[in-house]
Length: 473
Image (spheres, rainbow, N blue to C red):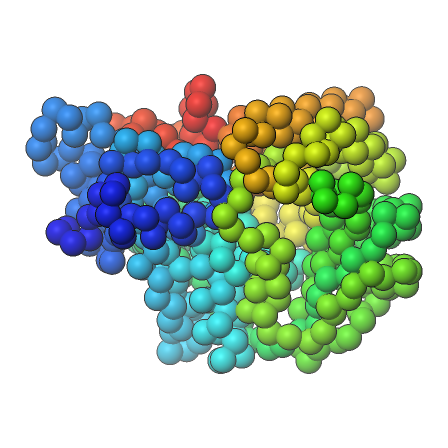
């Protein structure tokens, strides 16, 4: 691989470290990086690291990581201390088939590069909502999109994966070739090989209406009622996408409410009726709603979560309930108080609808275990961002406390749901287990078939493994 291998002290490696979203990941020190430029490069790297060439005894113990966009916040998710990190960022091509039915995307691309290209053609794919998030990790973990109400999760819209298997074999996984692997990759994360290309269903699109509105916390009661009514609507509008957040900062020592709305109908519909309960709430502190391109909206989201800080995610899922939302917010407020003076702290609770309109398109098409029979669900994401390493322990303890108390209340109030969205999960959570025993058993069977030596369970410790163990997920 020659010049595609970089070592810890080289300038190339310094640049790669800076491409991670969170400081925790950037601070991990691998022995070297492999900057793959092609599927063949990945195949060679995996072959060597799997020890098929038997170069040395040391190779038997060499562990490695896979980096696409590098957006998962916890240390070791897509980087590895003392091992080898395979960086896919140069594999970022985007192309559309001649019949305009399929968009092929390299696993190192981010969503902004995908949409910037497709916007010029008035086409779209079901993809992520933040510009610099990588295509690979988000898609393999499920993926929520502005278009999920119409077409399901991101993984449900992949028609083919190009995959480098353990020991370097390259295959295409789709409905006709390696169908079990094809299904396992729809939520199975990095447990089976390295996906080097994704082929997505493609559809005509164009600029649509959306944007972000900020409100004072005094509107919380109206917001909670509007949100639960929106999620529970029997006529849930599939064109409507909503992210509903409450954020506290150490600088302001106070909370605000933030709603991000997108309505993907083309031609664009301004101020759509689906959001009327939110749009009538006053006062509005700041409002960016407009008609814009897909890429433009993802760039706006990116500005709201800049790289280069310390970050932590933690998630849960609950049955839609205004009463439980209020309890959750009370717990979020009480748990932030001991750390309210942490430098640069942003502490947020983000709620996203997961109604039958979406889960009906997931059931049977992926391994996430979601079903419309679960009713109207809500994904809760707790996010903390801060500046100093010295505050890591206190912030992590506060997030764990919030999660434990919120989960206990969900059980007490009868609104708990086992689903743990992998792309938002904390290192100590078990999203694979949250898919349910049938899905987990299926994933383990596929792993035994395609990876009988356990390369992607043992030598790729990052991410969430199929046989949970201390320090893996």
